[in-house]
Image (cartoon, rainbow, N blue to C red; front, side, top):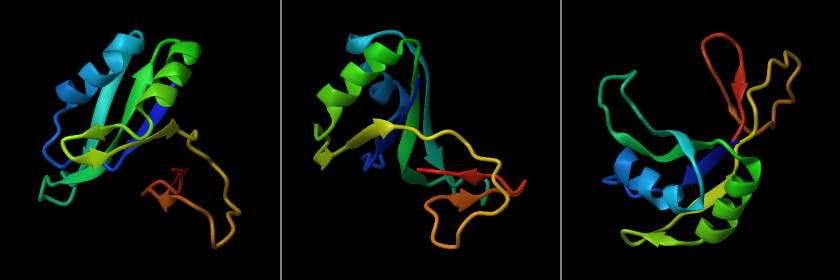
Amino acid sequence: MNIYVGNLPLELTENELWQEFKPFGEVLSVTIMNDKYIGSGQMRGYGFVEMVSKSEAQIAIGKLTGKAIKGRVINVVEALPLSNAKNVPSRSVGRFSRNGRIRSY
């Protein structure tokens, strides 16, 4: 299950985020988003954690939602899947990628 984690401290590392989720079950991957594609490399303050078990992921979401990490209270929710929708309402939540897909948050 893929988990969105928002309001992350900009100095938080992927390994530190991994350690927050590790007690709740097996973590497949951790990605903290940054601006590497435009050259600055600055952290964006959000990321994604993928866990093997949906039930373990839901426990992690429940336990970590609202937790303070390095002085910031994080947001933890189930990540929405990518959408291939072509007729998207103009007020949708998400961002367009170069291939026309919308990444929902």
